[in-house]
Image 1: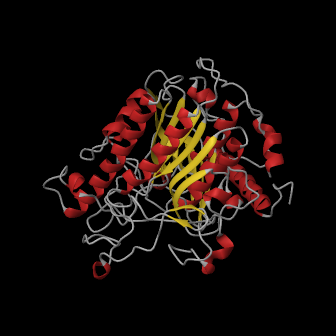
Image 2: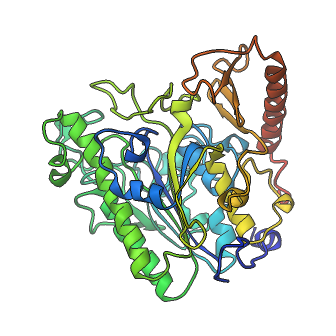
Image 3: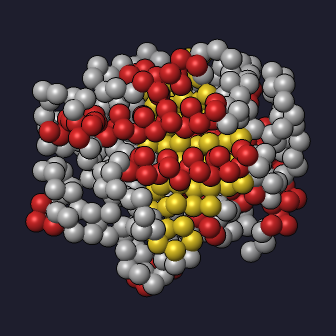
Length: 470
């Protein structure tokens, strides 16, 4: 695997004409868990306080058509690290499959070129222990899915297999909220933080979970910056995934609202504060200019947005988590990179978590076409440079019985494995109300053909045909 990695990546200076430094950029991928497109101030939420994310929007690129790789967490995380749709390697849903050893992750590639790599927060791409039964699949019951961050290219990690409460993450909450059994309040939650084989964390685990994660991430960033090492940090928050709990300081920011609203909104504001800590630390360490700081969500919000379920907002879009309608996969996303992105810009071009991988390869002067695995994403370097305003290839999706293909204007969608199809014009009808399939049979036919070819390609990948060394 290391030989393959060395052969497919050639490190050089950054390709951006605007970048004055010769050093490769530091890269940070931040991701929220179940945060809706409408759950940030820059997308119009009237109540949730997200001042630091809003400032990222004002200082950099604000993506209005950014798509998670899937409408569920595990598959999207896989797409972020590989540039490939997770159906190519068996991560079909949450708690299904794992990151195969044959896959090349961003961490593996960057490690082979002197980057320090770290993962912090929710992993959800395999189990972290084969001995202790914990979380959803940890221990002997999930031994076949053992694939922790430290076996996927990460030098440092502070990681959980899956979800934890967003306040006091190691214990069952006492709050009367969704996803909590009040009879178990104060008992061990059953999901732990791990830093390596058999290394379960026991200190600094009280209070806000986003702060707990960022404490470790900031230590990693500081060490790498002081050593003048380029670094790659993946910071995957648990917020605002259930159990959604906010601490007293954050509950107090939303007086007069329901308990559920206070916890949900407060949990997001607590995560936003940690984004602020990160941005401040980068400036103090003198590395902010040449650091690509990305933020997005792994899918749309849980529930139906009504009382008693998740209050997450999809803004004007239909569908939520688990749906390939826009509300399930269109997520808030920002890029702050002061050395290159020198002014605020709204991006209406469709982009995806699968684009991270080829974008970073392009920045490191890698010939993307020579990559040994089929990539579903594309490089956003031209877009970042202001030289691309339309997407040259569509974004394909598959989840459970749903299929979808999204291009610059139109969206093809099926809820029944292709037995029937609808076609939407996302420019004129972003809410996906009007099916225009009968009006545009030419577009329907072309997009169906593209999607069918893509599905065949995924099946070929799943059979292992991408793995030259198998």
